[in-house]
Length: 459
Image 1 (tube, rainbow, N blue to C red):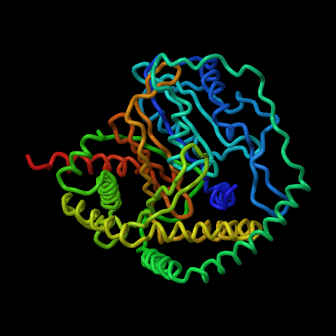
Image 2: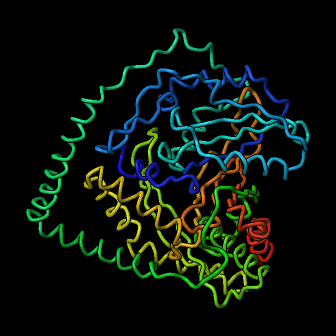
Image 3: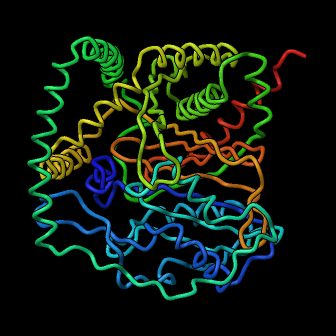
């Protein structure tokens, strides 16, 4: 397991749940439990990680490793439930409840829920997978492995032969490998130093870029003003899914320049401005800073985390939509020039050189401190992942909506995940249930943020 993947395991503590997920709605009728079983059974050979569990070494001598689960039972990962009410609120509450519990580490770290009883005969799949397995981009690839490109796609029969788990390495071998990794780490550090000395020109150029990015990041590391948007959280979540036409975001971008992501960040800014005003807080006296994950993936098809990030200020103090958009455009342009994402990626990569025991214990100490004394440098998370722009199908039924889920943790009480699919932008808004009873204000404000810019276009 990579250092970043392992970090998502180490930081989870019973309150800060670090799984991601999605709520996907489909046209009816709902499939049977047997059909869902066959759907997942037919794709397990293409997703070997779904039959692997985490093995932790004694005393954290090495990073956790993946091993085949000899007791794997697909039925333990699939649940069927029926909504008591057909309205969207009932589905949102169910989604929040599913995401409020952590995955069982004795098994492969994923679950899927089949939900029927939705309005108009629709049904839903709730997917939940630990962040140590995938990032957002890998999650989209996972979705495409499970779903079909056509309603009549033929998956064929299930596995021709029963799957057999490959025995994992012995504990003695794993510990020996971990000790060897410590030696390799020392050699890597030596290699990094010697390599840098051998190429002084490249090293100086890299250090300049790294220094610029780190300087930009440190400028955003100071605590923001005190606000109700961030602070301690509890173990339970609330969640809302909303959407807007992707064509509206593209029309705004075409008229005003920038990117679809600029439109999204502007809409999220409107949502937080509405939230602050509804809570009686002055947006002009408040800073809202968001972490924006950036994919650095170079190879498709891998289930892991390959991500960096930037930190952006959301101009909640600006009331005029057009001016708010221009402020976001300026912010994102500057962030790209600052090399912040490259710097954070470089710092993250250095974690590979940290001995596993030190990383594990250090992360857990940090998590314990942050749980009692939340950071205020980052107020929220906004993650946008491009999805397929063609319809996908499950068991012959068309997927009509796909709302992503991203966790809140360590002082972040609200987080927003965005995925584009088949002509729509789908927003999944996560909140801490104890401190976000008004999550609808944020979700509705995001929709309004896109709508107002679209309607105010020059005719």
